[in-house]
Each structure stands twice: as C-alpha cells, then as structure tokens.
Image (cartoon, rainbow, N blue to C red; front, side, top):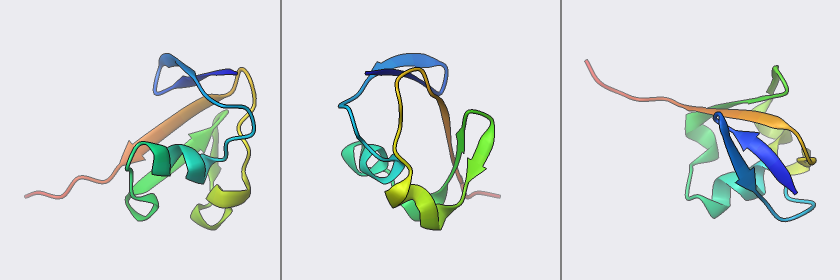
Length: 66
C-alpha cells in the first residue's frame, strides 16, 4: 500500500500500525507527535492504529535545544 508520509509517497506493508512504522524507522514513539489524515493520534493508540492505502501521515519530532 502507499501512503503520504511527511509529504512524500511511501510504500508500506499492508496492515502496518503507526507504532510499527515508527519502530521500522528507529523513531522513538515517546519523542513524536503523529497526525493521521489531519487528526492527532494519541500516543497510547499508536499500536492499535492501522494505516490504510492513501492515508496522509505527519510525524513531528521534538527537538531539544536552546
């Protein structure tokens, strides 16, 4: 299936969850905000939120600094 991830067409395995996507890219689930089709996904729902063909996903990482 294909989704739009942070503005880029991305091919993913069918049935992958938000958490599965983050883990496959070595992204810590504790350090991101995820927006799926313009709705914020609560962090405790990452593991049960399945992505579907044509979804638009934005993954925003927290960056420290000062």
